[in-house]
Amino acid sequence: MSENPSLHFSHDKQIDIEVEGVSQKRRLIIDLTWPALAESILVTLISMADMIMVSSLGTYALSAVGLVSQPKFIMMAAFMAMNTGTTALVARFKGAHSVNDANSALQQAMNISLCLTIVVCAAMTFFAEPLVRLLAGSEISEQTILEGLGYLRIQIYGFPTMSFTFSMNAALRGAGNTRASFYNNTVANIVNVIMNYCLIFGRFGFPRLAVAGASLATVIGQFVGMCMAVAVLVGGKQYISFNFKDRWRFDLSMIKRIVNIGIPALIEQVIMRVGTLWFTTIVTALGDTAYAAHMIAMNSQQISWTTGMAFGTAATTLVGQSLGRNRDDLAREYVKLTQNMGYYISTSIALALFFFGRAFSGLYSKDLLIIGLAADMLRIIALSNPLMNARFVYVSALRGAGDARFMAGVTFIGVLLLRPVIALTLTRVFSMGLYGIWIALIIESLICFFIVLFRYRSGKWALIKI
Image (tube, rainbow, N blue to C red; front, side):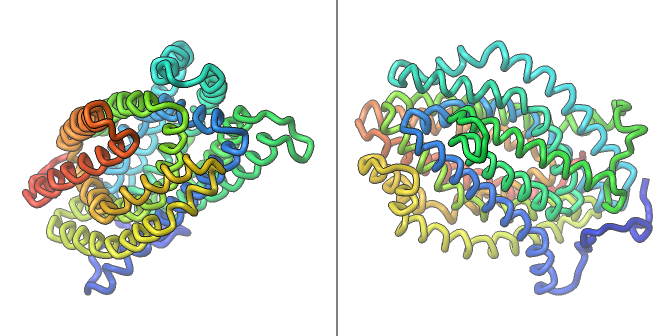
């Protein structure tokens, strides 16, 4: 049902995608991108602060948190997949001026999150330990495994708040409100880092919980973020909002539309997590020192991907809303502008990582071997950073169009086939150690970039109905 958008008001600036002139389009991209970019940078910096505080406990603690990150990502996979459908649908409905359908998509996304939370948390409660031990292999110490399990069990209890927040922020982004997610996550992450300091080290009267304290601090921050997201959506001043009376009623037709995009995206996420788990076992086989250096480099290089992810958020919203108005020409123009704007920033970040990688790595550890290895990995990844960030934009544009099936195929080729096979070859056959791991990451990323670029240029994504 189409409605007059002028009847709906918001504290957040309502975007008009059909603006005239390149400068106005660039301004619109910036309006959508800066909150997402600031949010990504903030999350990365907080993640770095988390790891720095954890690493002060010893190499075992750093490896423990890194070890359980993959099981945690498995828990998140289903929600990330369904939220792909939520963002794409809300963007289409916003472009078509159908606020009732946009609200229905939000409400059904919350229903899906509730059901998935029950299933995923129950499964992880039973399978957490065997999964972590499988990842650890024989080269990771028992202390690391036990600390990691303690961290993961606390995360399971706090998972419902994170899943609901994901759904709410996904809908807000689809509506073009990237600022709400930024504000929510800013406060949540500030709470997280403060509680980290209190609970890891036992400051200000709090107990000293070490690695478990880092996990509990994350859960507390997530709860604060959820409360803020709810407050935004119940105020009735956004394009989309909660209706508590109807929120838990199941609308099977809308759920089907979300699932039609979400199932291929879920398959993609499962493929990604299985491939990443396999890849992690290849890294852990190199031992605690190499794995600690790997985790430091992975944590530090996240800042190099923030540009691509932020501009990708803008691409998802703008492509979805443009297609909602049957303007695929406008969608292409926005993708081109978004790509060009992101390229210059990502190149600057890549240069910083290349030349200052050792300084970044030195924040996490005093071990010169670990610092040197991590710094070398950052130099390797910096060489491909601009193209990897460009890939984020194209991938986000395809997801905004609902092209989830193709993306599942690309993930299968890249993460489940190319990345682990190349890594195994370089580490086992050519004995390249951690260098082989990161060279494999670059090769896989570049091949998948060109596959995604070919798909985008084919134009088939513009014909998808959701």
